[in-house]
Amino acid sequence: MKVSNKKIKRLAELAKLNLDESESKSLSSDLEHILAFVEKLGEVDTKEVQPLNHIHEASNIFDDDELRQYDIKDEALSNSSSSNSDYFKIKKGINTNNS
Image 1 (cartoon, rainbow, N blue to C red):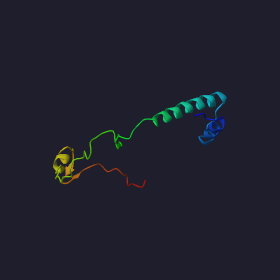
Image 2 (cartoon, helix red, strand yellow):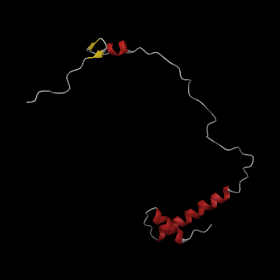
Image 3 (cartoon, rainbow, N blue to C red):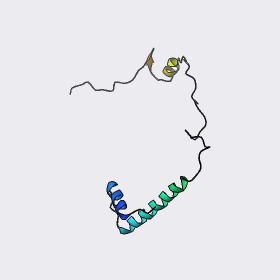
Image 4 (cartoon, helix red, strand yellow):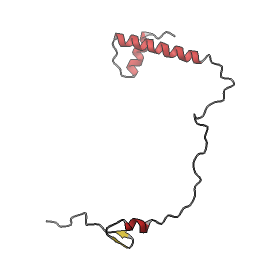
């Protein structure tokens, strides 16, 4: 399929490209090769080929949802240098003195 210079200019305009003459010719040639390849793909007989939804055949590969009870509070608090029953103790982060 022949790609006209007018089409190349329009594509360049839509893509906001500033192409010189050699770039336009190169793009025209590349597009002609791409369109020829697509036309060639159209010749392939695919009547017996099933449509492909995904490249992997696996389906529903996720684990079942299970309710699990995690009690990690004591373990987390044991890693702290300072804690008070259910909370971490930290130094005051905001200075409230208005001096």
